[in-house]
Length: 136
Image (cartoon, rainbow, N blue to C red):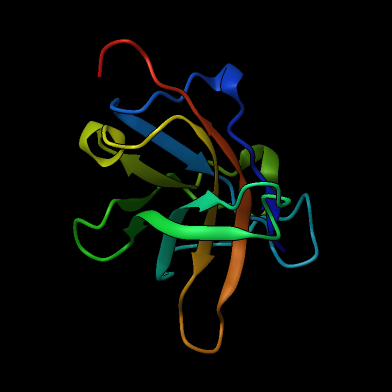
């Protein structure tokens, strides 16, 4: 089950800075039971949003992709437990400053997807408000 994970302007996600995005992954149809992501092939994309269109309905080009291949920018950390309160397993997406320094500020969409053949599923999706500071 995909869950919405927005990065609002109040999260201070600035273009040109290093970020670690942390995701919990829930079992299909649940908001309390966790999914063990060990061994998953994962991809995270950041896309532009078409002007005047609901961000989750009309997306433009991919501007950044991360994946779980060696040095691809996605790692799995922590220890899995099906009970959310004791689960420390997280999918970590590493964003380097150089990944976003050329992007303009504004609204984007992102999604974390399982890419294993026959098991493809969007695990998380959301709107990202990317900010631009005077220095990058």
